[in-house]
Image 1 (cartoon, rainbow, N blue to C red):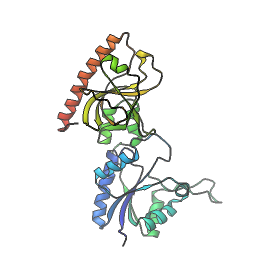
Image 2: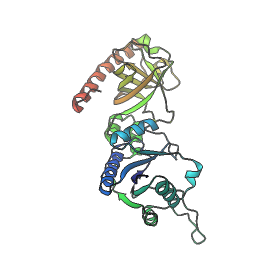
Image 3: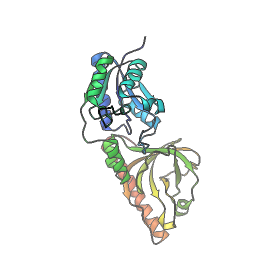
Image 4: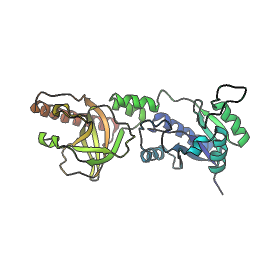
Length: 305
């Protein structure tokens, strides 16, 4: 027999503090009504915007927030064509067994209705419509209050200006980009600071602003402290943007291996140096500052990165 569910639905991009609040509310309402909690999300953004979390990472973060039952909907033409009522009836009620739906008052789902002969404008359905449809379909619809000013779009704004520490405060976790090590130009090796060229796995994931960052680096061998440069390497007349990470006190060849880079804080902007020696001195100072930043973070949060 199919278990009945309490559900909430959304992109959950970044699984930030606002999303975590929603998940806590879902767990509470599910317990109160004797239902199983279900998070419904999508495989990609309908707006085709850059994402904060690739799908696998998003699912992991939702599970860490406390819900294991997750339904990932694909944005197929058939799904996009469903009206809100059709979506609630066919997907939520009939297929997923949802009996309680938690949604924000400004949340929207379902295809916008076509204009009627008496209404020149199309009708964008909202919370009151969902409540009415729910009564007809046997789905109780409850509204969720807004939780602070946290939003995925605000986190994107912070990252695109390099404010990775502020973004982490909104997310409730540090921002991470995962990929594999590709071929580089070996400029860092000649400077005494060899770098791994990170090629992100998800080309749609947002990359923070150009600059130099204190990071931690996950490799098959474990986690390490490092510093990352995002930019064009102007001192060497670079043209394309690269993601180069130097792992402190690590000398193994990582080419082709998986790599995850977690951003702790921004050290400085990328800039042109008059000489290689001046750049090497700056890199030495960057490494010292990186050690300080990560040590302070570990002490403040009582955990090793």
